[in-house]
Image (cartoon, rainbow, N blue to C red; front, side, top):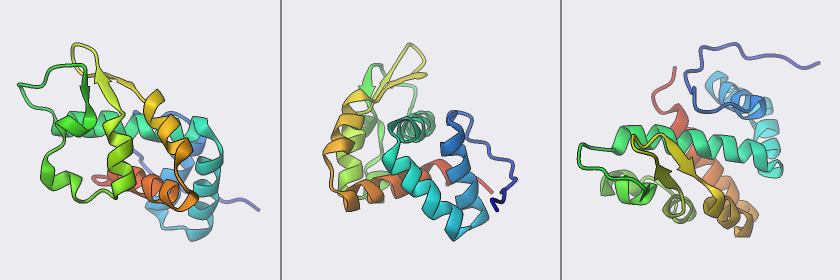
Length: 140
């Protein structure tokens, strides 16, 4: 029987229900649901895209400054101290995420998703972990 993890998840940029379930499972520290959510995210591109989209928008909001001009790669917005917390495969994926729009409110993730498809299973798991941690950094 399935169970739920109610929470006040503030990750408004993550819209896919499977992605939101994974984030709630992480907040609830439920190993069973987290394992299922990880498996779903790694096998369903739309879930991974939703998570990546939310990660990029959250980090762009956090890392931008008054001199930021768009379009720009998320990697170029990131402070060096923040980048060292990301695994190397995540850094490579972040290099391919483009923040666009006059206000930096749109993202392009097609190149990053293609790169994710080329990674090994272990590296994809590392990237997923970094994305989830980045989204939930300020949550609960």
